[in-house]
Length: 331
Image (cartoon, rainbow, N blue to C red; front, top):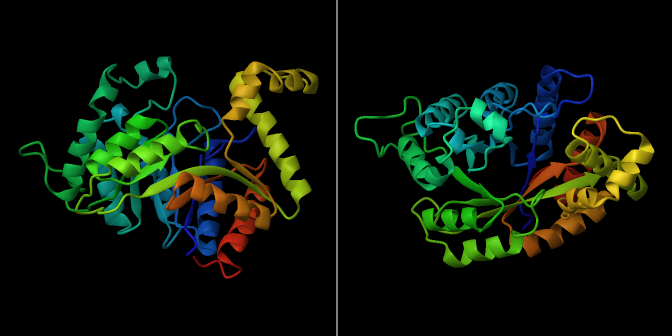
């Protein structure tokens, strides 16, 4: 049986755009993904990043939910140490009441930003250490069994919004296994520990009432096009843009300067983050994803579409769905 495909949407703000342009594109993405048979779309909490507009996942989910009908929408993830668990329970409880059965809540412990922005967020320096306890407190609010006497989430109580632990190291794998929760690994940008983390998660998994079996979502980059040559050229542009964004820190570079940066140790390190990337025609990408799913022991794949333009990313979404699910777009 074909395992489901889902999508990550970073609400990318391209040069010359406003965040509102990214949000309109997110609606179009979700509508197309819904039509093509993708299971869910997740939005990740980032702060102080000019090219990423998904700083408030709950607000963006509410907007996209109003323009779609069935696709699951969620966070991939909410960086829980940035927030009080009660506030997140109320936000996602509200979403669950608005869109019953369609809301996911992926949780991470990374800050999703830089050290200066951490201070602006008023984040406690020790907040990440409380992540396991905060996850359990949040879960209590959502399932109607609050760990804080006399405090309930309204909305939130009894919505049972499904929680997913996100990670890129053994910590998240061990926590998800201990709590009996699904686990999503960020292998689209942190490939190093994928196989070890999934192995630890599966071998140490403690069944819960809601999740008697372990469940793994593995993230992977995809650039699909109508020809291999077109896909390779798109991927080349995406890789160069990634290096410029991360290593040049907003500085304008000539093509020659960017060539040198791409070939530098810093550039090679950035490109190494994209180790798990499927590039090619629909058939080539589907073959890669089949092998990757087996390699990652994944029950579901979370796809980051790496294309240099809106039109190309929408076409990539279609090419992948046609090859994976068939022309009818049904899982």
